[in-house]
Length: 141
Image (cartoon, rainbow, N blue to C red; front, side, top):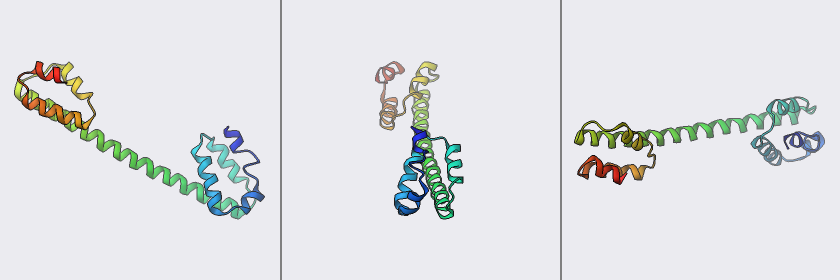
């Protein structure tokens, strides 16, 4: 499939020179969203004879890569915040149980650490405060 996307039919310079910048951007966005060989893509861009088409291609490809990097950063930040919030909640549940009942079995700590859902962790925190003993908390887990 990627060979076809980088084939002569898609990279017909006469055709590329005639399409609007918006249409060309859509084609590039489609190409770059697919699993194409980036080395072949770069070589293909370098072989474009018409300077304006080559410049437009390089500019748009760089813009699209930057947008992808930014999106990746945002997703990473969001995921990191979510994981941090979950980890903090997990530690809160374990701390309440340790304050109330002393040292906890490692298996219980592991089970709590595997819960990532914030709402579930809130419920567990409340249960840790209210439960009569570790065994009743474990049943609620």
